[in-house]
Image 1: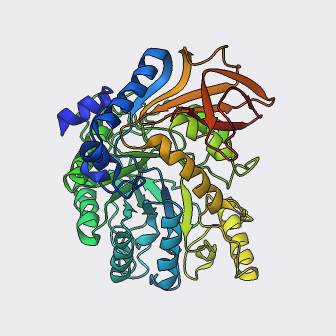
Image 2 (image 1 turned 180 degrees about the vertical axis):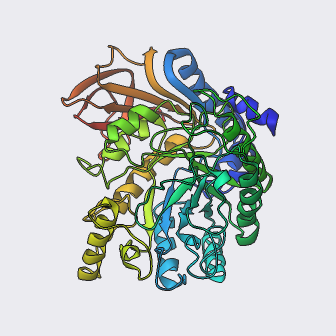
Image 3 (image 1 turned 120 degrees about the vertical axis):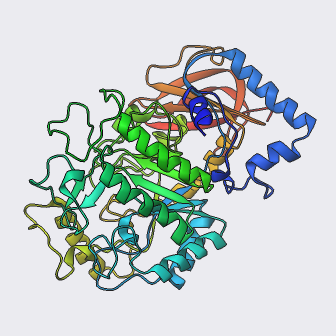
Length: 498
């Protein structure tokens, strides 16, 4: 495992591992990896290698290049139920229908946020156990019946202040003031705390073993140990040198969990706050969630475009506002990213109005104000349209799912198993004239060669390609070499011989 991780962190392409053995089916019903390894003819291999050769020789400089393996682009955060709540969730026919809709829209991996667990111990559990164990297992079976993957939330740092199991020596700065929002009173436990590790690790792995899920989503809840204003606690063992660019104790902790997830053939998704990525020397995750708390989709693109794969942006529409429905795809597809879809049961906001739960006042908490406004909206609009998460736009936007499915259908051919991606090309033989300043070009080579041209400027841009291409968007039109890219838009082109 260590050798594999070291090779991966050094940029050496790796074959797909078993965690992604259920990647989206390619045309014809075969899985992408199986198609290349078992069914490609000599002519298929020749064609793929010739397309890659043209890119290797014709693209002289780009931001990043990747061999795409084991990638599941269609992902959704599933609102199984809201928490806190008056009664436990009980998955049923509505979830069966929703999972069918998500599957038809190209979703193959879902994750559930912490609402699956009993964080506040309202129903006799805790943050590592389900509000309704039988109901959760039934839902997992529903997901697997559709050949989809499911991950559950399990943080390596966050813990609810006031929980009877919490010990002050796990957290720098305790006892002291604790931040609060909505029902959360979360502290961040130290990855160097021996006691926290002994408490958290067996319970985290127990989630995998108890509920039969395909992996974990880690909303890390971490404060750097380097240059930390609070002194170490008596429970911390600072075994490694912490620096501004290396979170060493965290790397050790994540490595232990990642190894166990991989040993079970699982998937590990990470969220490292806002647009950050873990400052570790090894890449100890399969997918990285970015975008939470960011009020600009351009900022998400610019700060994450050079992150290692695979990046799953969740544009925070509680703070940002899209210019149009296609904007989030403009920011992602050219950089081999695809945005998270919010789905599941409607997000009603009722969690902000549960008797007996301690809340701040609405004047103190913008999130509480927003959720209570959503609760009023839901009661007045029981037929929808709905929001599906607290990152979703409110009032709800129409056509969200249709747009997501539309662009996913155009994105999947670009990122089939075994594709070489060349992101943000800066020097190449692919163009008859230099690219305009605000235009980005990325190339994807496999059995077909695709060129994505994105114009991030506010005026139309003219691009002249050296080879002839056809548009993959309707109407495709005849092969050509001159392309006018409208402001804040993008085109997906395919070589005319494909």
